[in-house]
Image (cartoon, rainbow, N blue to C red; front, side):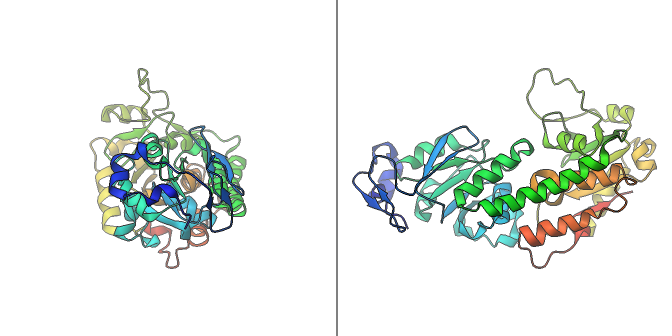
Length: 362
């Protein structure tokens, strides 16, 4: 572990008055790099994070706390999963294959963080997305010499920047390149096949009845990327920046989607057939839905968000493209891509198969 002068203070006192803790003198790290006390170290690396902040690290992280399940999936995918020592509760729930113990959980969510637990884990870096409490984290952890890096793995728009950033932080540029290559392979295939096709009307529902994605959401982005047209893509939000909203059931019948996707909360734990059947019956049994083109044509799909939101929604975009344009993707097996993501990039040895995460409802 790196020896930090600030950590010699009483932990309880330091948590209470973090602004008074400071470091001084020369510190020698495990790898022999010297910290002169001026904030610079031999062998240090500098990164620019998703908040536009320049952050200096003593070297590639050997111990990291990573909040957000998508961030932990990325760390695992680039080959740095074994260096993550602290997590959030959501990651523990969504990613059971990581074997996260209770004493490794330092936060129930992205806002309420137990900084005492973070410090006790002695990480080299603390990583969380931009919708987390990163400003507070930076203030709380500064005196302990624990740098905070903002990396937003759930954001489709900054996928490459995020993977590259994590590759720098962990010293895994080749792993980051491999993940980026898999992502580009998927979207290259999609863009080639959907070019020139007629957009198909899509309604994508997330977790709650009639809750759907608007322009600016990742769901809208993958609909467009897959050669679809979000039936609520023209919804006037009145200046509200929210990317999801609950819509009027009557308006959905009027907009008549050709394909319906219902995605429930992500979890790598295989989904039981009973849940798929229950959700499917609810969807197709809603008032007026028997008249929808999607229901009449048997194009209603129920998915576990772990699959369709995986790899910054690249996996979901591929599945959707095959559902929207089956002729163009007749020789494409999206299940194989999901299996690769699970086995090659997440290290899941007992992958249950695509049918445990996606099913056709009718």
